[in-house]
Image (cartoon, rainbow, N blue to C red):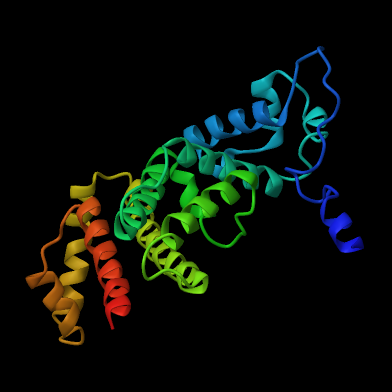
Length: 245
């Protein structure tokens, strides 16, 4: 009984459960929501490295010390940023259709979110996503599958979601790494490819990389969107094969 009572008590170590300071009209009204919206705009414009409580305070016309009443650390702010993006994905509506439709919708919503917020790829892995919006989105994802034939076992549902998510995160990080390399070079994509291709040719000419050579010569190189969809379909086909075995 005591454990049940304790579970209802807000945890002050979790930023979304910690009460905000009392509202003050002067000099500038603040809230976690205003702070997060300012941080989102800053991250979208300049990247995660530029996000600091000092810069956000300046955007809001406040002092950094006032912000510390709402957020203790930058890590908490990053957690709130991720949860705000989950809120955007929730707003896109329910996950409808069969299980493949639902999984495809989840995958593409994540990819579209990364295209709106390029910094998100850095935060998709390596930290738990347990904010209130993430919980709502994860519950909706589980519900979209667990109500369908073949997903009666919640453990199977969970593992399927984890498998698809692992593909999505990896694919998006691959896309981001190439974009980063091109941006860091200061070249266009075509210029970057022309500049790096002679090195690739020299390496392939050694004969040590026959399978990579086959990829260069035989494989079509679709757009990132097409490549993402092809890889996703391979994962979905694997899930379908397991269900039918």
